[in-house]
Length: 182
Image (cartoon, rainbow, N blue to C red):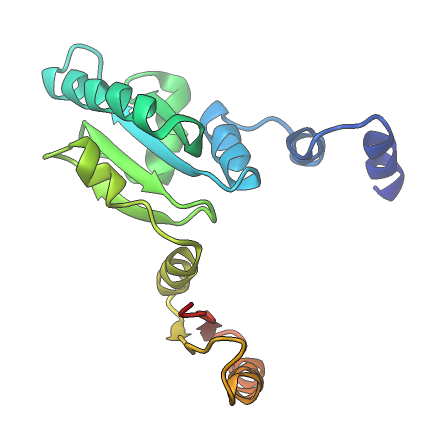
């Protein structure tokens, strides 16, 4: 395994190529989501059906949004009636269209839209890295400790040390997200 990895690195393979070399082929949407995570970008998944007026409206909103968001956001569209998309549809529990999912750079689904889709509503779902960590913890059904302390505060290091100690004790049931208010 290490020899294979070293060989791939020596060939100058990118992160995604390394992942695919070890995991094997992925569904194109899963590959795009992995690429978005590696590039620290938000992702949007639109599940649609051909010929649906509501889905066409959602596509139009995403087309306008993609111009505004540029490279900050990766957008993928999934036709739910294609057989090759049945597993991805099941994985995300999609039962109706249009359904749009906004996914944070760490892979957490932060918002689901089924109606009232606007560029502004989608933008409001983009979250900070700290909020993405909090949402990941909640999705994993963990207790969230949210210590807020700037590095230059008098007791900042002791707060961090204390919270980390609690995290060690409650390792599997807690997520700690340190927030710098500055």
